Length: 566
Image (cartoon, rainbow, N blue to C red; front, top):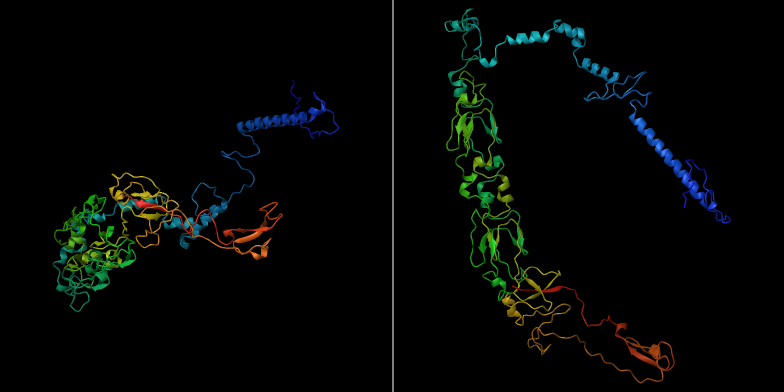
């Protein structure tokens, strides 16, 4: 067996076999011509692909495959190369075109004063000093340090003599050339002994504290309304009514009083014999880790609910855990502190009352120190109030939790009271899987030791099979369904249907029957068919009038009957 002959050449056309062509195999045979031509094309394409791949590798390996192009590394461009002109705000590695440079220079010149918009004018302004920055720094080095307050003056005695401080104390007050000018009380420059900042009893400029005017002449008191709060008596801590009334099983409740729900409110049976009268839970529960079976009230401590005792909270704090300093004066909250003018950087006694920005005697506003140097803001805590967010208007929790039918309620959420069906009561349930503590009524047996209460309702230890069944009320002596025992089953049945047909002749016409009767079939040959010999027969079919099935039933919806087991 030999392979087809292949040529590495492109065949322009592929031969089409004709119906008249004979079957000729072998090299050059008509039967192999199409395959040879296609194989030649494939060999040609393979060669071109390999050539292209080799050329590409040579191209990639060449150090300068495109000699007509400038290299990426240090290109030497010829002619008039161009590039996009970037915005003046750019600060990156883009090429700066001549347009970008000219625009930047123009912006620099246009932003300069007219007298300094040339290099010559700038040089003249700097005194033609080529070392201008050095000259400036040398001059600055000769200046005195402000923080030294004169301590670094080389010749202090000569300085005092030059400013005349030594002779000022011996000069006379008068109008002479060397006298100290006399200023009378009427002069606006006069400073009275009682007009100094140390003795100031009123601010030159009145301030407002949380909107209340204050000039230092008297203490002021701010109300909760001034600081955006409500009185302490209206806070959530003392709330006796919810801002938003809740409904509990359809009964309105706002916390102002206890409410009582009836069995009807919770979808339960009357109190006699039901869980409504229960004084103890069948299965004890835990509330925040504390056992509770309903036989007695329980009390939860702050530790049970992850809280701190009220006596240890910040609301009752009288001392800071970590002492602070106020203008370098220690303060831990156990007592008031007094800051001196020096502590707060106040003006010296020579300061005038007209320019006073600080009270001689600091005042306290609701316990907060205030000396007039700046406005202050008081918090609700400063005036014995709570923040607006914690007031009764926005209360979402009762200060004192209530009990509704024995269920704790503090207003944080709606509650639902369980109807607590008695053990053994079957109820329709909308799911195939019953909840915990319930069993399907499917005829199954149960352990009477495990479920003693259920055994009291079903002594046989077997639940009724209610799958596909309708539940009927027990007759209990009424007489509507006499002779029945509790939990007894009853088969299906209907009331008897009777009727008569009058005298028949040899045939009954189809027009003479109606309703459940039909006369379209025959007797005789082909008996029972709709065509035949003999007389017609009359049939009875209730489906012609009412819906029918293989059972009697009313309209219904399927539920899963389950029974409470414990």
